[in-house]
Length: 106
Image 1 (cartoon, rainbow, N blue to C red):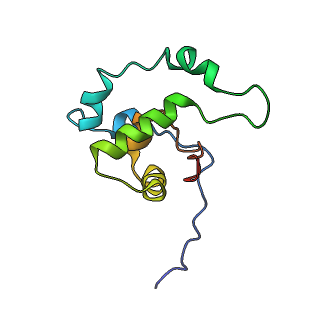
Image 2 (image 1 turned 30 degrees about the vertical axis):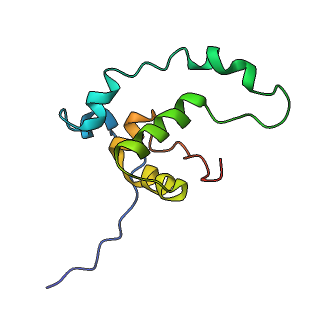
């Protein structure tokens, strides 16, 4: 006798690590070893206004541009779509699964 279809319930908590899902020999891991953008905010402070909406983190924008250059993604819209989908791109840009990707018009 066939039983009824079991309804699926979304998990309340997930144990997921982006670090574990990016292969050791991925191109972005090799690049990440040499890219140090910790001081970038200090150098760009004078170019940002103190009024208006908060800006996007400059490190995130630079990391996104690096991904675009390395993988031949020339469209900003396409780059943002790929950020949503590719776990390695999110890892390299320091975005968690729940972090929003900046709008393509940024």
